[in-house]
Image (cartoon, rainbow, N blue to C red; front, side, top):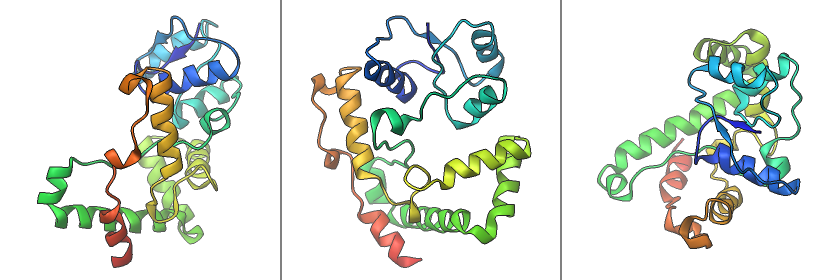
Length: 199
């Protein structure tokens, strides 16, 4: 039995990919609503689940309580775009100044977070916003700044990771009839390119 934190999302898809890599299948996942952590603890710690796959913050909490992390998402599925900002094309065309300001602020924020001289300030923000104890804030910062899997310099879009997301979703949930679309269907990186040169 496997516990995941939501149905039909990247967590379930990645769980299926991890199991497939191990020659297993996920027939009946237990859907745990991670917004309330109590049900997760009820499901995990009595031994009902043997392959939890959660995001960074709850995974860290579980590891501290004795569970073993088997692998990261990228260990299992390869390059993976976990987070990105999105907007409807029509809205972006109608509001280019807002998009530009948002992206410029995002690039500056990433630069600030990745600067070693700002480590203490970043940890303070993480501890406050995540309501996390210092060790967990440290762990999250390590994940956010890890080479290759953490936050991309200047927020660069991970095209290969996005291709892999489309591929996995086509193969496992069967989206798009099993054939992944070209990334260009969803992308216009011109906004980011212009913002990156402006800051």
